[in-house]
Image (cartoon, rainbow, N blue to C red; front, side, top):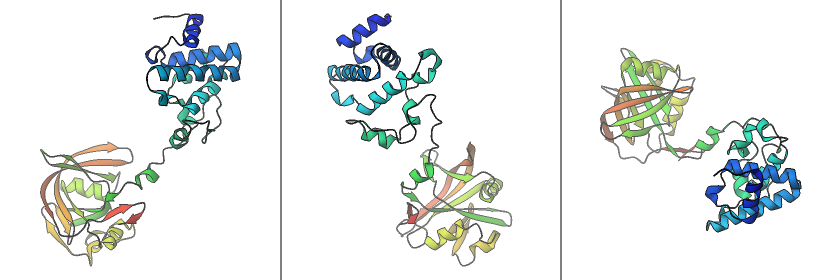
Length: 278
């Protein structure tokens, strides 16, 4: 239902609006109108009271967030006119100024932004530190091996996951332009040896960029040859796969393999977490 600005303000201040009546666009409009009419400090109090009331009438008072409400007021108050700042309609705008952890800590009290001051136009969003986050997620450690003609290559990977039971599919991510990707593509097959606890030296060897090329990299590493490529002896489990598909994935390729053979060993699997083997 359309409302004039005066009608919208009256409905908001009288408590006549519900959550369904108050989408983000109206939140921005009401806040801007109040800051223009009453100034920032008074508008902050009115907006907080109104949004808290909407949350309480919806039976969810915990939905009111002190820092989010005030931060939006600070940003909206800086706008001379809303039409010139369409970014205010972006519900994720506060991620330019706050980390998720900082916002979570500010539900019941005001928390200053930890990424950038509350100014417009917004700064670029910080780059996502995916590596630091994924280091906290335990991952199985495997050696992917491929053999094509007289050549062989292996590399340590920790990005293996199952995709489908029927047909049995797994995926693994390999760096764009890597020898492992090149040889697996040539062979049309590869193996995955999920290392066992105690095989940390094997994981380190096949992750070492200075290791010898070809068959020499397997020197001193017990292994056997299968139709899909070499399998590391003593592994906790292993898969022999034929190439099913290769998809682009940023600076890697997502390799999907159909499992042609598989078996398990007796050892406890080797896991990597926060840069250490467990």
